[in-house]
Length: 237
Image (cartoon, rainbow, N blue to C red; front, top):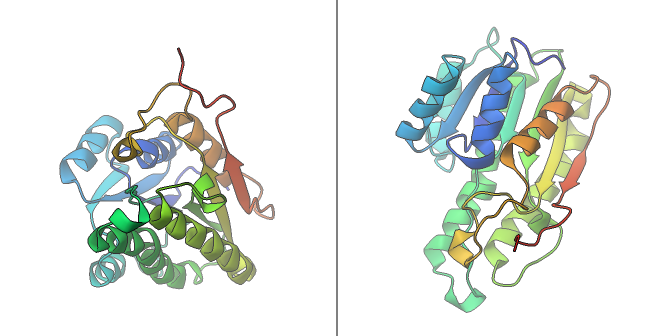
């Protein structure tokens, strides 16, 4: 796929990996709808990269709001070719110490939100024969468990299953689906579990460039899953 002049949607675009992906796509000529809940952070990205980044203040776990935004934004003449499902919450506790509210928030954002935006957008993507691509950002914690991470691991194992099934369903519609499963990234994501970020973790810009490469593969080539880890994950002395 050639990225220039394509329309992309990136969820969780206000910070971290989502921000890096959105900026990289804009830098390569795409129009990007950046979805997140924090308006000020989205506006700051637009000021940095220009009007091809369109801030969208939206909580993807709110089904009616997602459906309304999609219906008001897209039609048969304006169909996005790229969807990057990056948004996700992570709270890390022992199983008997997880507040029910935190568990439900992770399920609603990481799984239900993924379903709401994907199911509504696929309806439009099917209407054009050109190549489209959905990339779901999972985690190595969707492949192996981690203590005190039951809720997060549950959602990311779910994302992996969702991605695998969706790829088989949509390949006949010329829609690629890729699972992208990174290890630790230098962001503040794991701060709540006492893990501080450091330079040996994966870098958001490097991962964004890898996603760009996946998107740019030939139309009849599907990379269905990638697992990316730091070669040396230890914190520098």
